[in-house]
Image (cartoon, rainbow, N blue to C red; front, side, top):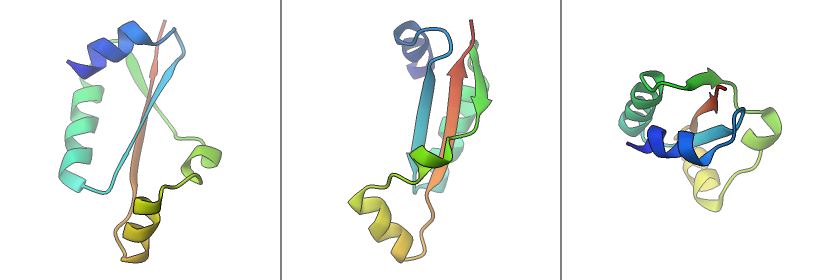
Length: 75
């Protein structure tokens, strides 16, 4: 249901940026958005990926990677 809500909220060309440290949740997010009508996968900009939270830095320091995905609403 989230992709449909995001599609309503975003203007054409708007992007949903996702990030998590949980591999199972990441796989679920990718599956949901890959199958969603009206979205195409895009890269997370390097500048945005460089912005990290305290939690993210802590997990990365422990060797837990940040997993990122981004989806652009098509027209």
